[in-house]
Image (cartoon, rainbow, N blue to C red; front, side):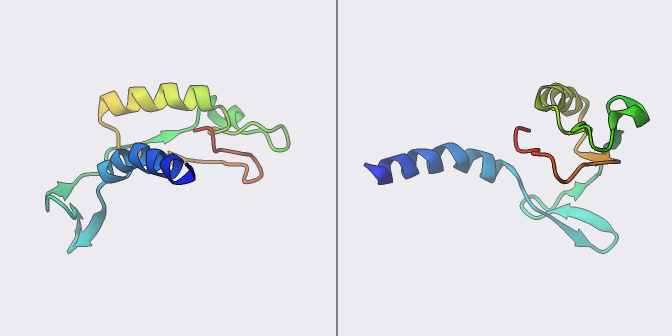
Length: 98
C-alpha cells in the first residue's frame, strides 16, 4: 500500500522534473544541454513594494507571500522571463509555499 503512494507521488513529480532542462556554459554562451540551443537570460529585478518590500524582523520579504509570488510568476512567464533577481530575503522565513 505504501509503495502505491510513493509511485503516485513519483508519477506526479516526474513531469515537473523532466520539464526543467539543464544549462551549461559553452565558450561565452549558455547552452541548453538537451537541444544545444543558445540560452538567453531574460530577467528582471523582483522586489514587490520597492525598498519597503523588506522589513527586518517583521516576517516580510519579497518571497514571503506565496499568493503574490505565484501571481507575478504567471505574469513573468507570459512575458518570457526566465530569471529573477531578488534583493533582500530573510533566511529565517519559510519560503516553501512558493
